[in-house]
Length: 202
Image 1: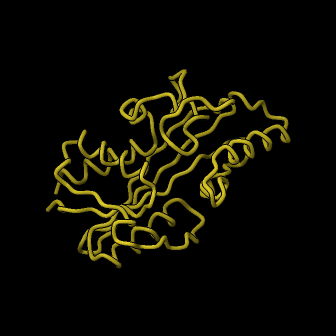
Image 2: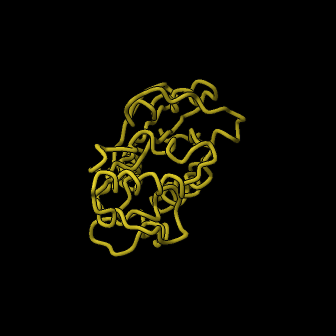
């Protein structure tokens, strides 16, 4: 049976808006989405060293606190020449103020120190969705998106690392795409497609 409500384990309004759009596009707009801030929940400490582990920490915390179905994502940008960094630490590289210009600079600086051409450096996004249903059952959905980095950042759409990432098959960064266009390529869009397919079986 499909849930009436799903609580997203995030305080990021951009993620909530993006997932709401995806739910509607998938014909699941009748399911109400809320986020952790609506329940005055703090964010649990993410102590895992994997996307799956951190997604599960967040989803379990919200499910336990609310008694409702919970969905959490953990995602990040993995730069091949930096051994997969920033990876699970993608948000941390932006600092407490979530200054992604700072994160862009760190990536560019480290690539230059490694004598890697910054424009066109290969990278990929990873997104893992952890869903805890009201019975406490756990479900994991994963998506990836391959592409390359481009500097300087381009576009005002999206959030996070979107302005410096161009997916394979495109000339525009995620930051230059509409939400609908981005979903075609994005790791979150692909993970969500698997999640939506699961919900439709209920």
